[in-house]
Length: 436
Image 1 (cartoon, rainbow, N blue to C red):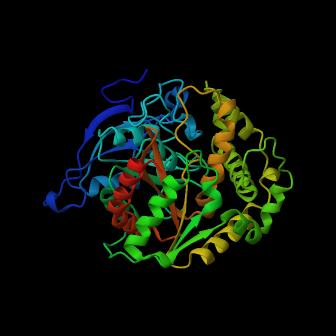
Image 2: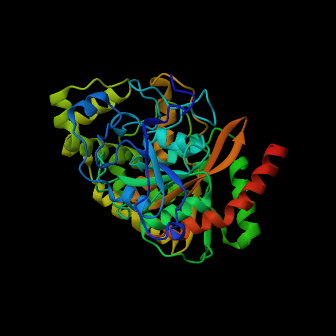
Image 3: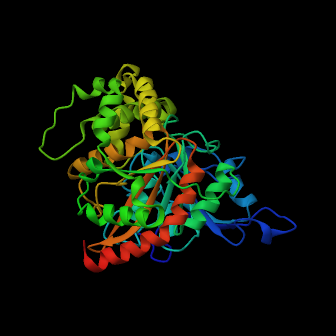
């Protein structure tokens, strides 16, 4: 059971002060505290990777990951290492060995994973910000479930050195905060960006088909976003699109995964995004096997439900299963780049609904997971940057929305979120009162 004082967020608590300097007050993260997912190397600490057998069979790191060092160099104080899902192989947030961090936003619901403790530490106000990783959704999902900001940067832009790999084609270092200003400050340091003025978006594309995957009324999100954009930048940049159709027509290599798709139930799904998600998960399995197959086979670790099945599937994946992934990725990047232009964003749900209840059976989560990965695979495969933005609550459960921008447009997206968030909050407040 999660410890109430720290919500079960931490594996290990300590104080690691910022690196000494003559003028600490001038550092951008001075006086801020942060927590680090138990997947990052920190000199003298063993990264546990969410599993006791991993902890037992690995030795302490002899250096610190550049992403963590960057935070310390910028004046922030590290307060501990946070809990995570085993081997980063879940978006749920439950851990059979160490307990599940308590979701401060919805205590009877999962916190989301695999960066569960990092999200909970920020949501519970135990840390000002935190570092996590996002391969298939491990920052975006817990950000959404815990009612905070989560940022997945453009793939390959923030160093993943000193981070245990999950699947390198998709691995990113992401971060959480409760406010958009801190999100932006941390991002500027990790991305090595100067402070720049906001560039106005020239198009805001609302992915109407993706919002049909949402289990709450879609207008509760789309109206809040559209009204805010209109107030700040004018309505002429707003446009509704059918993202699934665009991807289907512009990414012909996806047909390889579409032809085998037989929908077992009549629930709404977006064919091209289901195929995109399939291609992502197959390559993820193959890369996981290359990274950790030998360790799993030799050590035979005790793995929890859901994780053990996924790891088993990964170990049985071959290179032939991957299909034309490189073509899919290239075609998707070209399609989205052309759609977004230089300063465009696509708006869609982060996840298909509120966080599932704790200890929901793995089988009954499958439809939800499939829908979630349809949405998460857009940034996953393209490598474009995505931010999860909290939008209050609906029926007392957290609501979020995601915005996606072009690869390398991270600074633009961070500035945009900081600029629009007060207006979004006003619109959320109106939405909660009138209950639309």
